[in-house]
Length: 230
Image 1 (tube, rainbow, N blue to C red):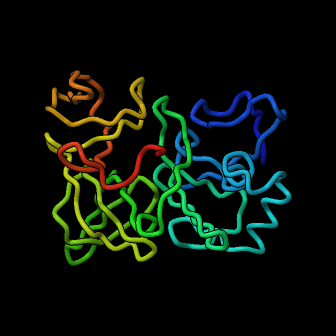
Image 2 (cartoon, rainbow, N blue to C red):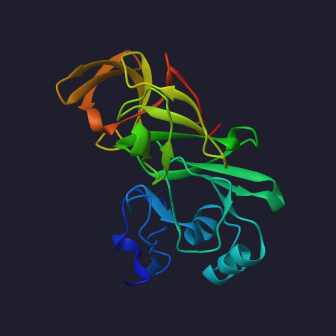
């Protein structure tokens, strides 16, 4: 597999300068799709600007603590994606990856308390031995839990322990975040379902979208995590 791809051909969700250099580091396949993930080295250099070259980014990863969801990462090609938390303990900074109002990946700074929590969408369920249920999450995590939850709901997970703190159900009244489609990046309140589609309200306007594009992030118009820059 190639280690690089042309900037001009990179996903439209990558908030990068497409004309500065011909190539950009290709993330290794991992928990996130290329649409919703980007390599950690590119984040350090092109988005956080804590490194001016990829060589500097590699040195930072090898010599300093760079945490993703509370665990140290050294690989500059590690894919980091939607709602992942990046922590730089040496400078006491924490960031979360979100989608901006145009559906592009961006980093927003969060405080230390918020960096210990993450919202994960349930994308599958597996029945294990003795009836235990394993929940498969959007970021590749698999968590065994006795929580009453369905595919499409979200877990509020503590970091780095990966304990399920609460369930955010995909029901009318839920605060939802659009992660795909032409309304990607929208935040609204779920109103109702129409077969495989959903109707949500944003700024007193009803919008219809695919049910699979919804990501529950809170209840009654409030969000459990920060989604926008101050």
